[in-house]
Amino acid sequence: MNWKEIFPQFEPGLVELIEKEAVQRTFLAGEIIMRTGQYIKSTALVLEGRVKIYRENPDGGEFLMYYLGPGQACAVTMICAIQSQQSEIMAKAEEDTEVLMIPIQLMDDMMNKYKSWYQFVIMTYRNRFDELLAVIDNVAFRNMDERLEFYLKRHADASGKKLIETSHQQIADDLNSSREVISRLLKKMEQRNLLKLHRNMIELL
Amino acid sequence: MNWKEIFPQFEPGLVELIEKEAVQRTFLAGEIIMRTGQYIKSTALVLEGRVKIYRENPDGGEFLMYYLGPGQACAVTMICAIQSQQSEIMAKAEEDTEVLMIPIQLMDDMMNKYKSWYQFVIMTYRNRFDELLAVIDNVAFRNMDERLEFYLKRHADASGKKLIETSHQQIADDLNSSREVISRLLKKMEQRNLLKLHRNMIELL
DNA sequence: AAGATGCTGTGATTTGAGTCACAGTACAGC
DNA sequence: GCTGTACTGTGACTCAAATCACAGCATCTT
Image 1 (cartoon, chains in turn purple, blue, green, brown):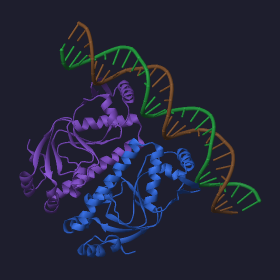
Image 2 (spheres, protein in one colour; image 1 turned 180 degrees about the vertical axis):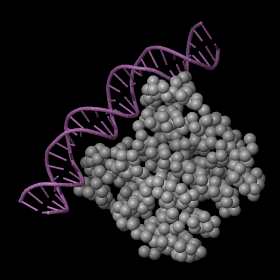
Image 3 (cartoon, protein in one colour; image 1 turned 120 degrees about the vertical axis):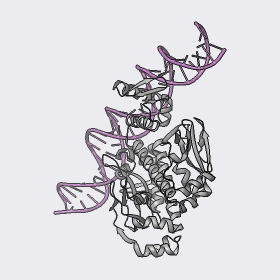
Image 4 (cartoon, helix red, strand yellow; image 1 turned 90 degrees about the vertical axis):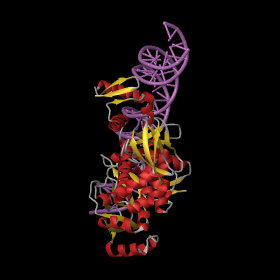
């Protein structure tokens, strides 16, 4: 997988620098990329696969914030990286995932020298900020059924598939709800012909 | 009110530029500084007073995200400013408030030229991001009583006073709850000797 | 002073969602 | 095949919070 095709907007000097200094790394599905409280030493750009950014709650739930796909980067990593601070969130590979790790020491210099990097960082901030706003909207204003619909839609968008391979329990964790509630709501959606339920799989219609 | 004392970290060249190009403006308590969907033409730095950043919900509530005090700036304004995009949030003066308005055309240049500005912007991003994470934690994981306690504490911190001058209805709006629920919870807190209730005023103990 | 308006307190009821209990089903491994 | 494990479906119950209904107060207006 050639990262230059995924980030075509980067200017030549920047490409060279990344070529020289960055490390490409693979995470297997389920592997934790970053955990709460961990110190950050590099910024991660996603090349392939899907990364789940979530917040761990006191009693074990994994409250989903958003997914990162190819061409995206974690805003938290960037901000933390710049100030070498601790992260407040968890990142996990949902599928086998390739990332490009850029050491934080380079960040300052890159921001100053390469306009295309600077713009990429700003765009990343804005997009992640907007995603957080959407999450807040959902938990603050919507009922579980609406949140579930939103969740399924986003999952499909992020993976590009109509088939969502996951258990009801996993969805409940992501939404900080309970399995029974999700099962019931899914059943209702099936009756409304919005989807079809299978074992470990939901088929959107 | 001299803004240079509030932003002592700004370097001389930057101070000069702001002196020349920025406009100082006063908003009266209750005045809307920015509304959802509005196009942004300048970034606002708070000099004095307090600005409430909130999200309007479909049926009229004002869901509180955070307050901005002297020395702080709105991250959303900055991000939107840089890309001249629409805002997703509302900003309102909670008290009479002085702000310094910096035209967006200058942003790019300032980011490139002045390290102190660049650092200020990055710091602002990070702080606001963290506040949003805290908001998500609260609505996702906490019950109303805990959220109310957090709300009162934050209000006191932001205003620097032990007296919170507001109605139960206003608190309910900020937390996207209902007046009766808040009244009852406040009563319970009063019985636990955490505060004392007055008309349009809550006294923290 | 009388009335109007807005704020607060409190019971009764409803509702969305979480919890408990348990049954049925699909699949993996032996 | 049989068996254990993980996933799913459903009824019954509980609980937090929203809603409804109203009454008492404080403050302002005229």
